[in-house]
Length: 350
View 1 (spheres, one colour):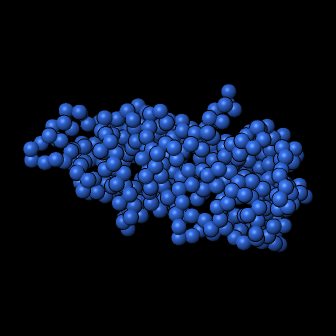
View 2 (cartoon, one colour; view 1 turned 180 degrees about the horizontal axis):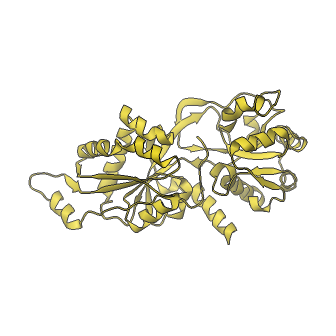
View 3 (cartoon, helix red, strand yellow; view 1 turned 180 degrees about the vertical axis):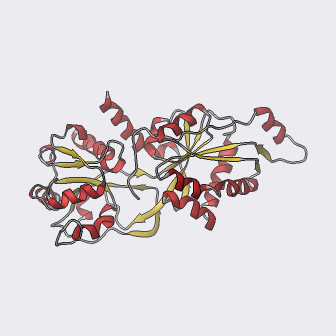
């Protein structure tokens, strides 16, 4: 459940549409009720190394053709590519030159919601903590993965061992509410503006609770990675650091080695949660609204096929490149927080 990008992002790829007359001829065939798709083009978002994605997803074509055959569709060719960037994927889906967008962040969907449909949401390992109240995270016990699955994750706004950080933590753990003045007087470490957990959703939380986006904070520094952020938090160079929900698990060892702290990262004298954002959607699988092959029946067949593939040993290896454990059916309503976050970012950029 790692960081996820959030500002405009999409796959770039082309998709060949099947002629309506061909579909009609196949569906009305006296010998078969199956339908034929000549070329199904899938574009993967480049959130990991493109060469790694290409290697991992190479088996998907044959797997998908086999599963779609069970759903009544014959697919002659599955064309798999990796987009040059997230934005290129969205543009291709919008134009109908790509059929399927794979691994798309929720905020990318928000940008292209008028031209795409959400087909599935990825599942990932759920955490043993998923509280909306920050003090509930501050019990001194580690955050760990479970055998359950989740379709969203949280951004946590952490404070460190600095005097200001502990001042804010004391208020939260004592049942008090923070004020804008409290937050604005602290020094924040922020990820790039494309980071969902490190920038966008914290900005959404600030706007919803105080009427101020992240850009209104008077004392911020940009961090180039979460590792850098935790190093600065440990050293007291920053007071506040927004991170993905299980980030402390990833940096627990570094906290007492590389960063030189004498006490565990889970100790409330070291780090505390002072705010929890709304859920951040896991990656989506999108289909184009401007694509003639994307009929209601084919979307159902494609959805069933991808879910079934994700349950096989081969399929699990394919989707592991995105840390996906499986897929669940999804609708636009599931991504309302992503739309709100992107609307806020667009408003700030004007």
